Length: 140
Ligand code: ZN
Image 1 (cartoon, rainbow, N blue to C red):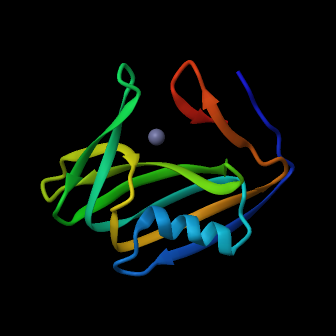
Image 2: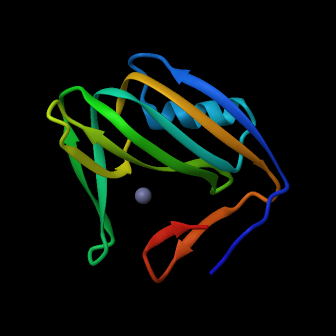
């Protein structure tokens, strides 16, 4: 187990514009606001979207794409650094018109219909993602 400790935090509230890519928009928000470590949560809806599933045996992501509007029932993620750049790792639950949910790793290509978010920025050490032999993932 690894852990870091933080003394202070700053909370920011924001909203993406209709048509913005959610992962890229949230990342850009963090860069513009100097957020290098912390967490993010969001709700709203996508015009189209997709989730990833990490195939542990193949050590690659499988993608499931949706071409219809869906609710963002939940989006949670963390903010750290990868190769010196701000990097968001988010997971999302998308709900269709019947309330059926699909969840997984937030991919690029989730296009906002509406997206309200809260970013909690932490003061302290910035975790850097490095390759983890045991999982094949870039982890902090
Ligand atoms: Zn993930």
